[in-house]
Amino acid sequence: MSFLKKLFGGGDKAGSGPKILGERTYEGLRIVAIEMKAGQEYQLCGRIERTHENGDMDAVQFIRADKLTSADLAESATLAKGEQIINERGKTLFDGGENV
Image (tube, rainbow, N blue to C red):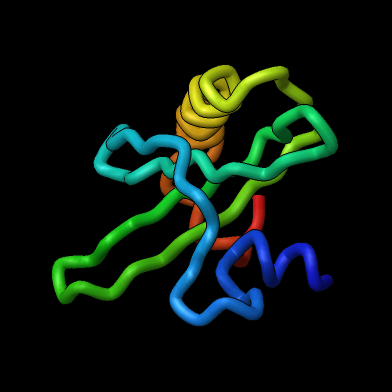
């Protein structure tokens, strides 16, 4: 569980969150590619966010087993996977909890 705390901002350093590799808006939702190192490789990891008109935000996180050799590849693969998740889940994306 501690790796999830570190990954999503619950680590020891106050104010330090996960390193953002990149982000993109797709179908009105924000996809965020998050750095997750797995040895010398990068694991596909991201978050999809929805902001309501009143400023409240919903977010779902996803981590996949894919390992990539560079941060650039991890960023592009994560953003593409986020788009795929949005296309597949549509409006039900935020109905099932905080992880997909």
